Image 1: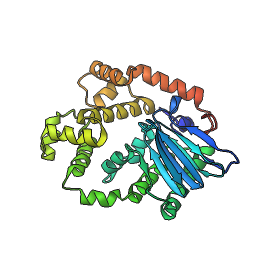
Image 2 (image 1 turned 90 degrees about the horizontal axis):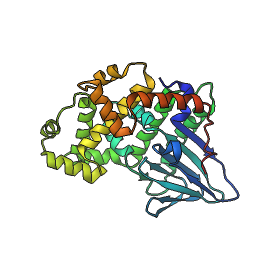
Image 3 (image 1 turned 30 degrees about the vertical axis):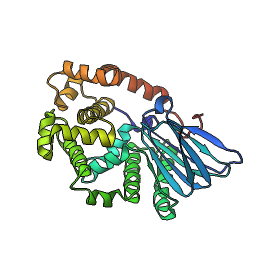
Length: 298
């Protein structure tokens, strides 16, 4: 089980004060490759260089959200200041939860998002949440997984609303956006039951080919890939945070036998369930005292 003392393996954050010289920060590196990142630029200018040399000029106050697939580096100009936070997929899964807005938040969290123009009101709403996130991590005596996940949920909700996604969702209920949102909601309900993709398509009122086309177009992954990703996320959480045996976890996730579960998990992660749990626990012991800052991120 991942204790709160090991929270720094799953979340990091800091406040970057103004500097007399420019700074460069690379987000996805080493242990943090799969982290979701959020950068709030309070004042000044910065440039995000995404994979493929896509450059995004930022002018504060503004916010950028970067999922794990967005390889990038941040160049902060002299005098710029802001917050940088990162969260593991496990934290994000807990933050999104299983509520009415969860499927829409999950879709939102999987794509890069940039504030279209400086928005002091939206930044003013999110900034206290980021400050609380960083403050929670800065005190080892109080750092709590539950608190960090709660901050992350509020942050994602605020960004989702700031981007107009809530309104767009209402407008798009009859089209592809609605099908994708409803599919993700069904995945949350059915992923432990291992139902065939034809059941999902039938429930959504579309063909399996149409469902595949919608998922590939919107997220770059097939419906089956999205379903398997959800299974793997849940398996990782249970291996890290519970004392249940591999067989109990396999049964709880609806696999027909532990051997099949082990083959599935190893194919998706490169580790057997037992090895993954052992590595996660050793990492917690060896790195549980990491600071919460990004100072060691070159």
